Length: 356
Ligand SMILES: Cc1cc2nc3c(=O)[nH]c(=O)nc-3n(C[C@H](O)[C@H](O)[C@H](O)COP(=O)(O)OP(=O)(O)OC[C@H]3O[C@@H](n4cnc5c(N)ncnc54)[C@H](O)[C@@H]3O)c2cc1C
Image: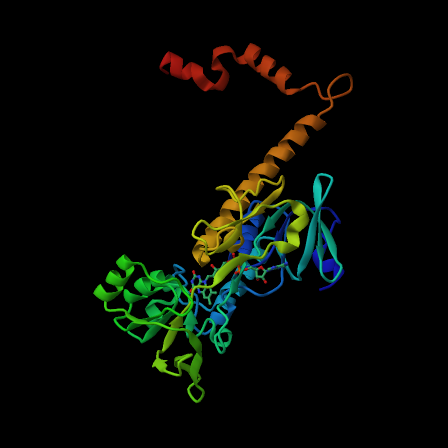
């Protein structure tokens, strides 16, 4: 990445630097470009769903099943078409610098921004079982809405989560819950699992068994040595926001209410509570799929633009020179003249009053 790639042609500060160019960041950049904001996206090129490149991104209306990487390639093209710039790089830190921010990459480049949007996604912390990480996004899955349809009617194993077992039972009659190190089901849950015909395997799992020839998951080997055949495995990762590199900014990172991970705290617009900093997508909503991440990016972009509009309007008003040799048309003067000249016709109300 060359120095020029990140700096504005006229050397001015970017209106917005977006840290992370996944579904959320690119949607935000598209929205900002379309209202003529100068926007730079810095992206380290590791979207969360990249391992599912062959499975596709599902539930994305109008692009159902699209390759996750193709979706982002199209997004980058659309951002560029409206003047946004997307560069490769990993942001090392963001610091406040007066009214602006200084954004630095790991390779030592630095740019200035009036506002910062964090869309860095999350890290899926997977259960530690031999053979599991290698198959993540292929036949080791977590999301019923992302890939439930693709594994319908197959032999599905679920690792340690009653909730996931019940969700996937909607897609297949052949569901096996491996209790492994998960919590013991409650009395009520045992009844539900039995009622729905979900098999339950007690005892710890040792590793995944893979059919090397077919390059497919074949089963789960228990510590006892027993192998239970399954074709797909559902796990419940811990979701951890990628926000530790922003330590100095003062963002609040909090445990998700469902105890499934941690995320940056934002309000409905994506505002973090730290002046000038917004966040959107998985970094602030660990349950968001691609469409939700896109929507959050658009929402944050609109909030940032509104904030900049007010800042620009305030600055424009303050910069007007009043007095001898200055601009006599101040806001209050204009209003007084308008009242004197137009009287009841001000705001076009006279026609309504006369009924004409
Ligand atoms: C295996 C799998 C399959 C999935 N399938 C689906 C599906 O079918 N449908 C669906 O709706 N959802 C799916 N999801 C969820 C989907 O991945 C997320 O909803 C989506 O990626 C969130 O978008 P995002 O922009 O918030 O984060 P991401 O897409 O993860 O993008 C974040 C970007 O920020 C970059 N980044 C991180 N840190 C830095 C830094 N310091 N500096 C610069 N850049 C940085 C990353 O490299 C990445 O490109 C799946 C998830 C997984 C794990």
